[in-house]
Image (cartoon, rainbow, N blue to C red):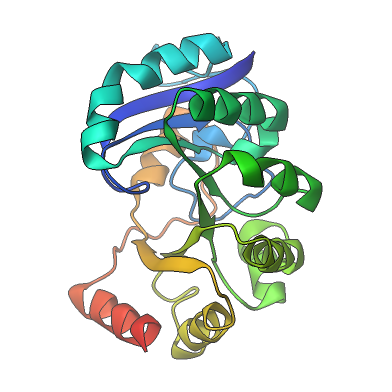
Amino acid sequence: MGIVFDIKRGGVKDGPGIRTSVFLKGCPLRCIWCHNPESQAPEIQWAVTTDEVCGREMSVEEVMAEVLRDAVFYRTSGGGVTFTGGEPMFQFEFLKALCAAARAAGVHVAVDTSGQAPWEQFAELVPLVDLFLYDLKCMDSERHARFTGVSNDLILENLRRLDAAGAKFWIRCPLVPGLNDSDSDLAAIRAFADTLHHMEKLEICPYHPLGLEKCTKFGLAPRYAEKAQPTTADLTRWRSALAK
């Protein structure tokens, strides 16, 4: 059994093709701009402003019953299931069982991760996962710790080891104007990405302020109160810098 806080069907952003995204609760990071702050705590939570619960216990069989409802769309679009969070590695045994069940069912498996987990866990998942969606938030370790609560040392080392193991991955860059999007930040990400051999794509994930509403709903104190979203000029500059 594990704790799932959402299952979204018919997505097209979290990996190739049409996908079902399964959101697992719990995360070792505390990103100040977190889009899903209700996902951070591992336990089930109740909203303080509405009669709403975040999280429910589900078995592997129950999750897979939801995932397989769209099996025909996976086959026709090259899609599959994406396990995300929170940080799905936070519930490692549940995640591993889900990946194995999806693989046995012939479903393409993606894992969306921050990279903050023991390498031994990644090594166990490599044979079960078709694609890792891997966050790179900031290359400077001290600023990464200030923004997320942890340094990026383990995160970068795990990505290097995944690359050496031949795992396929997309790098995803959550970018926040004025925090981690300077020209030097983007150049450092691009330079690191250029050292990797199995990266299939480098994506930009622009900041949006929806996490602020969720903080209010669940009685959480927001750590980043900026509501300004990236401008068209920001997006153009980011894409240009990361595409070089």
